[in-house]
Amino acid sequence: FGTAGPRGARRRAPRPPDATADATISLEEVQRGTERHLEIGETTLEVKIPPGVRDGQKIRLSGKAEGGGNVYITVGVTRHPVFTRDNADLSMDLALSLGEALLGAEVHITTLSGKRLALTIPPGTQPGTKMRLKGMGLAVGAKEAGDQYVEIKVTIPTTLTENQKRLLDEWEG
Image (tube, rainbow, N blue to C red; front, side, top):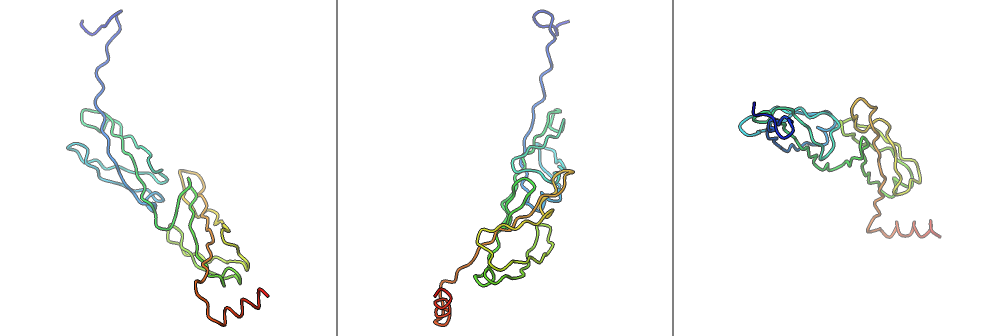
């Protein structure tokens, strides 16, 4: 019979070789999910990348490699110019003028999905203050969406007019 090894154990057929590929997506594509067409050997595969995928996460396509092996796709997420990600939460910096921080203001920000929101900055807001926008982060899986955090950065003027200097001296006085 020829398939038995020592002590009558059967030998397994060699496992078909696996293949690997990389797919790079944007943070916007992480939010909604996306598709990529990837060349694996001589085959083009359509790969569905689910919403909420993490940078470095691997997606397995069972039996899709040549000879029936698995294909492992490593997903890379490009750095976003505005948002940083912590699981389902997103963070961004918001630059305010000294006057906006001292006196308060209404400013407009845009979420990752493109929604414009009015954000009320209370008078006396300190640099480093974090404001939470509940549910405006990423929706990961079937869970509720994460939050978007806005960290306040105050821009200090580098030059002042004589009148501004005089007013500051009176205020500090």
